[in-house]
Amino acid sequence: MISKILILPVGLTCNLRCKYCTNNSQRNFFNPALKVMEEKILYRIFSETKPLIDRNKKLTIIWNGGESTLAGLDFYRMAVELEKEIFKNQEIENGIQTNGTLIDDEWCEFFKKENFAPSISLDGPSWMHNRLRVDSQNNGTYDRVFKSYQLMKSYDLRVGILGVITPYNVDYPEEIMNWLKENNINNWDFLLSFEPPESDAGLTINNLKATDFMIRLFDAWFNEDNPKIRIRTFRDVIRSELGNKPTLCSWQRGCLKFISFDNLGNAFLCTKFHIYPETGYGNILEQSLENILSSQKVEIINQTVYDGQHECRKCQWVNSCGGGCSFIRYALHKKFNAPFMYCGARKTLFQHIRKRIF
Amino acid sequence: MKTVIDTKKDNSVASVSRDEVFVKSAILSDIQKEVAEMRLCTCDDYEVCAYENS
Image (cartoon, rainbow over all chains, first blue to last red; front, side, top):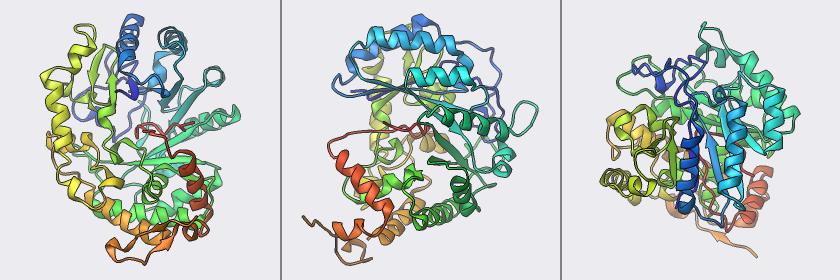
């Protein structure tokens, strides 16, 4: 069963030039001519994924990129109509990841009307964010993005913020916590920056730095003891320590439940893999999704992803960790079954959180 | 009802009751409430989008 459909309606095309973007890792994916997904491709995606979805559960469709809003509002209006037509009676929720630079009142009204849950990219206060998240003129984007965040909040949208931790902000977890407090940001999460070997910008966070950052941020957050400030990763770890299971894909062996499509109809394991065409499953215009998913290539990828966590299954933390992100394994080693680079950091975080909460 | 959580696996702390854990902090109480509501839920979130799951 597929639990989430991930869609890149403009592929990897983006209007920003963030310096850590793996989409730009010597692959020159930044400037293809903008090509918005055609309705016939979206129709095919929805109609062919429909039989693979649990009709009794909420279906989440996540719009990602590249920059998802480059597709324009008319595309999303069309997409919502298609959702209603094809998935009739199914409970659907739309999430959208955006850099926020193009958001205006019209977008917010649409999000509100159609119950979209947006997530915006902000790496911390302006001096952290502007260092790497720049536009094509190399100008920092903080002011524009934060204004969009405030606009979305004014529409009472359920908006989250996703930040990337890089060598430029990894030493400042307390400052990030203060920024969350001062700006009433109540739903934040982070990803650790890493670079594939073909890139050499010095933007990888090593295990030691990752550990230090996560523990200091956890302590700052936990000591504040304000449940209105939610840091998704930490809440997830606590949930699993209390006997539930984590929700995040890379902490629960979750990637095999998703499928991702780009603007041309190419299917992948998740949105991150689109920069590695050799990992593609196939194209939905050329063959049925059923054929794609039953192909030997998909079987091998799925089995290797699963096998990659063989060592992890012996680990005492496996129920909280899930073995880590398959994309990071692949990007660093070009194998799905390579060791997860943040294994040590996660173990130390689990031990620390267990000591803090019990 | 008190549920005993065994936290001795890494010799960090002795067993404590779940109730004692939750009164320690507002964050833990909030997550406890969420866990109770989600007990039968099989949610999964995609980490490259921080949308707030309803």
